[in-house]
Length: 169
Image (cartoon, rainbow, N blue to C red; front, side, top):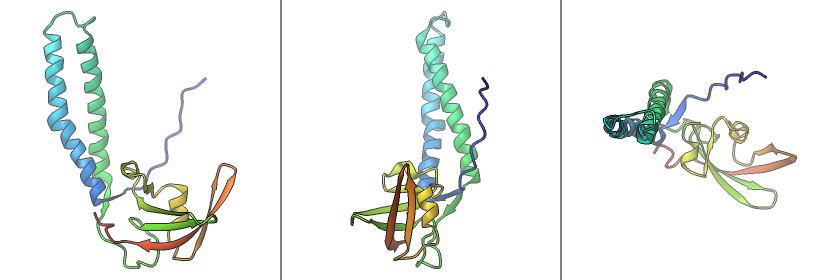
């Protein structure tokens, strides 16, 4: 059996200012604070002698590899991202950064913000611009209906509000 996995589709290169700042702060923390601290601990563990059975040394080296991989990923990803800092000219339609209020058939209301794939985990009300729901919402207007298939269920939502206030930060 092969271990081949097809490459993942490229995610959208858009991010909000707050999301970019969060990723950049993580990169700075890893490179300036976390990595030097772990490097110091690894060198102290290495000075104790036999490295083959030294758990602190082995764990520290593993931690360094994980930090280095994350630093490489963040460095590359930050270079290719486009920061969206202004709302679109047409605020009547749903675009990146919009807060959208939806209502389902049962009258329940949900409020989501369309953000980049690198930041949707920062808040439970954020959804990735690459998600099926966000794709269905794009370019829609208030009182438009969208349909989302989730498993066996076909859910209908009515767009009740589109808001860009506070969407820049």
